[in-house]
Length: 242
Image 1 (cartoon, rainbow, N blue to C red):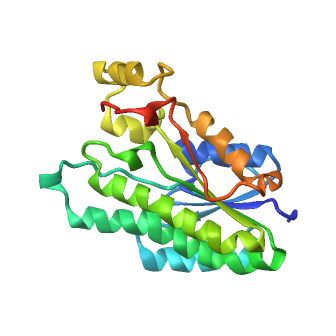
Image 2: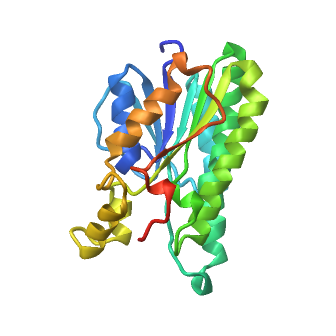
């Protein structure tokens, strides 16, 4: 496999993750997708591992297998779920699952890939957080764990910078995906009001996010680390009504 062009993408089977996989393939990467199901993408440089990333033991096993089979230089941790609830209905089981998915699986995958990155003195780690890290109604578990990504990334950035490994965060706002429509009905008045409340006047597209991911993981982006880019149409500048 080509040097510096081997990427693991979590949640690569649908939504933003699938578009990221497609973009990286188009840029010449070998891509390993870790997701609960297959993507349906037919490409010689795509390798798919089916795993439930909320399951810590299964994730650790899959991460170790991927690190043994592939010389990873890039990690894009995109997998995520929302599990919305107002505070009185928040279930700690949901919080635990999202800690495993958003934070724990990132730790396990990074630990597995780190020896090769350190040997090469090159690596790119990109975490997908969310504009909801700044707060959003019904998002206790989601916002807490997505906000946790910011501190984790900044810590890793400090630890790994001397080894040529950068760690950055892309935090999308509302984006047209199945997960978005699980919460907001397609074509509804609620969707229209949400679009109107975003400064640029529209909901985002997965391609908006994939372009930002591509920027951070390029070899030429080595002077950028510990940063958070909100790809949100300006929604992070004020309150957002969902």
